[in-house]
Length: 77
Length: 254
Image 1 (cartoon, chains in turn orange, purple):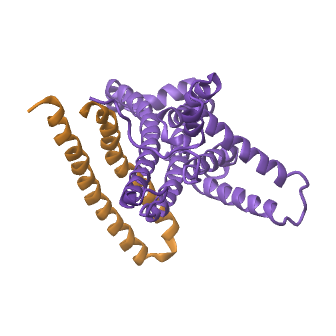
Image 2 (cartoon, one colour; image 1 turned 180 degrees about the vertical axis):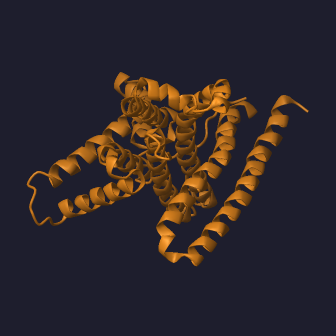
């Protein structure tokens, strides 16, 4: 296996694994936030704000993998 | 082996560069592409605000009404997080939000490009936020209080023993903030732009056998996705900046 083919196999795999983990985290977080809003609808704006900030932190991990992919993409050739 | 970047939609500057690539002006524009578009957005926003506030009326209508609504909304939002002292930071954070929102959505206008799909633009914004947050910390806490904050506010023996651990930890946290802010915005916007460019290419190649300059608009749903992500990322950038300001303010837990 050459360097290029190893990279070509592993880079999309890395992004997909990161996306899988982020998806699980986002799902848990969204479910908890929806439940909280359902229990206490008057606090919906505060919960949504906290939820969006948490989403940003979780999503950033996938974005790091995506940025790594952009960096390595030129080397696959 | 071809050094090929990710696909991107043509904009005005790449069209000029393709046509007049030998002219120094075209090369200059091509080199400073992102700076050109970010300056263009800043000028457009300035013109809009100038015309809205030229003859301010007591009972606003039209553009002035809309901008007052936006400013009031941002002000309420920032003061909801920071409290009364947040009034001083509304201009900075509001400018960040409006500017980033316009930059993200600018890529959806045909012939234009999102300047925030370049790491340099987002890194510049994130470094500005970083420096302003550190300046605020030194202003509000004082030099001693600032170092005390970095040492984790040691008040007892355990706290003092933990200082060698807390100090590098706080410095790494502070340095990781601009990195994550810039990478998040850059990655989201660039990913969205590449997604649209790939689907535009797919739509063109679907009817390529007709030999006509046409394409199937398969990228259409992703434009809405890009609008959604662009808005959320602008919101996230300004909310996280607000939170960083909040973390630098004096604590009131005692």
